[in-house]
Length: 323
Image 1 (tube, rainbow, N blue to C red):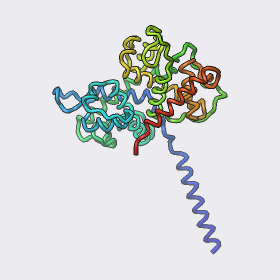
Image 2: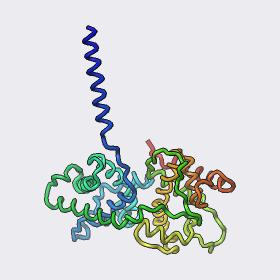
Image 3: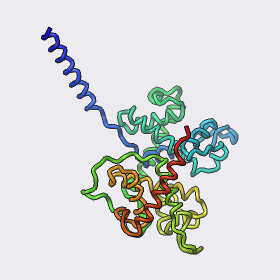
Image 4: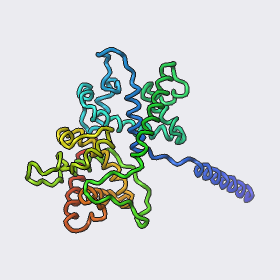
């Protein structure tokens, strides 16, 4: 009896070891970057089928079926549902919504492809066209096969064009350079930043923007952005330079550009804060105001960062889904 128990225990221990080895050898889940998602969304736009019919029942440059638009916009536009016509008339908002949708899709396909980027993109393109990612390797027809290959080709082109931009840190709103985390910074892994968090931070920066009381204060938009930052940021985030006047007159575009910039900033500050959300927001606010995130709890900057944090928390509460 005792020997049987020993044998059973030995088998159980061996099974645990085998399972542990198997789990240990599984590839780590890759974190999809903003540049990858933007490249995919642009590739989907470039590869969108052109029907040659003006009223073909598809909307925007991405040729989207109308039934998807209310659901996607509600999910990714702060709970605000857009009609197909509204979606089509707002290309910046449309792109932002599609980035939100395709981020999750690409992340899932990365996992399904064992972190193979080309396969993940093809799977995402197949999902977009047919609703089934697994069709990428055996498309239902030659047109779908050609479409998937076209998306991958456009994606790779976009990645090459974005390559130099994705290796640089965003330029600060203040005049001082934004320091990279030092060796003494917490070593916690970078926490994934959600679209809701970025939206809340961008709105908090808008609400906390200093009001000078002067019409011509040389600061632009509701966010009071310095003019020298606008051409660089707009080029980085939408591939086209805007003048300060253009930036100021299109609040929707300005919001999208600032969200693009602050996503990377917030990610960096999450890491520097050991994934403490409140401190990360304050550090991001300090970066925005002074160029130095380490000033977040010092002097007059502390008052500003506390205000941003307060607005951020209010926005987060408003953005929570209503169950």
